[in-house]
Amino acid sequence: ELKVEQNPLFLSMQEGKNYTIYCNYSTTSDRLYWYRQDPGKSLESLFVLLSNGAVKQEGRLMASLDTKARLSTLHITAAVHDLSATYFCAVEANFGNEKLTFGTGTRLTIIP
Amino acid sequence: DADVTQTPRNRITKTGKRIMLECSQTKGHDRMYWYRQDPGLGLRLIYYSFDVKDINKGEISDGYSVSRQAQAKFSLSLESAIPNQTALYFCATSDFRGVDTQYFGPGTRLTVL
Image 1 (cartoon, rainbow over the protein chains, first blue to last red):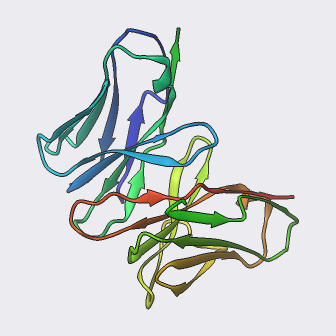
Image 2 (tube, rainbow over the protein chains, first blue to last red):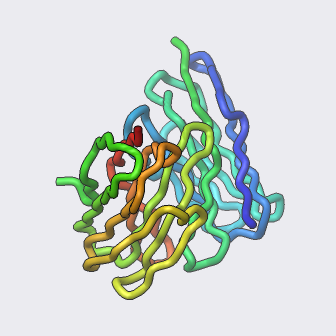
């Protein structure tokens, strides 16, 4: 059974600081996804990581994937208040299956 | 207009009642999914469908059933609702092109009293 763990579960950080959210998973995976959820809202796709060593960046967010370590990171650079949200990673264990197993989420709060 | 819509957006019902949540999409995707979100548990897959004739159980299908009426419509039913089915329910779609993500609807907040 695929298990996906995120840490930390809660993160409060000051504006302008850098931090990293970690996503570990238990079995071999072909793909990993990052989503953002604002309070009371739906999930918005941020990144799709398709191979070992994949790195994607959008604004102050950068995601990477190490399939050998079964680890993905979401790095936040110079955080701003607008990045406050809950971030989920999700893992697709079998290529083409598209059954996603989600982590429990990291609730990020950026403090001015 | 939103690509993935869900109705109702909010519903309060009583234990033992039958409830149907509906999902429609205009993205032309073949694959549709129903998830449940509970605080601290992330999203868990209830059922998924890869085409109209294909229905599969997910991680937590007990107490739920689904119907894929057309490519664009996928409904989730609670035959006899119970309080621990109180949750936020999301529908999602995807198109198997090798690189696509899942696109989520706005969610239905269901409360079972």
